[in-house]
Image (tube, rainbow, N blue to C red; front, side, top):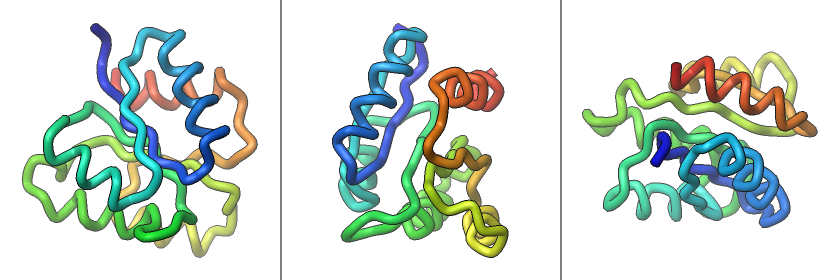
Length: 121
C-alpha cells in the first residue's frame, strides 16, 4: 500500500474529491471531519501527511497544526493547508503554526497531487 494521507475538511464533497484524487494516485486516505476528529484518529492511526481545511467547527486547521506540532512524533509531519483563504496574513498564521504548504480552493487534482508528491518525495 502507498503512503497514508489524512484529509481534514468539514465538507463531505471536498473530502470525496480529495479521496478520489489521492486514491487514484495510489495513496491510502484517512478522513476526518474537523481538527478534533483528526487528532482522535491520528492517536491510533499515524499518517505520512495531513491535508487540512482552515475553517472548520470544533477545531480549525491552525489549532490542529499547533496541536500536532506539540506532539514529538509529528514535529516534521508534512501538513498542507487547503482553504479558500488566500490573504497573506492568514497564510502567515498557518506558516507560523507549522504548515508545510498551502493550496487555495478551488484546486485542480493535478495541483493537489503535485504538492503531495513534492512534500512526500
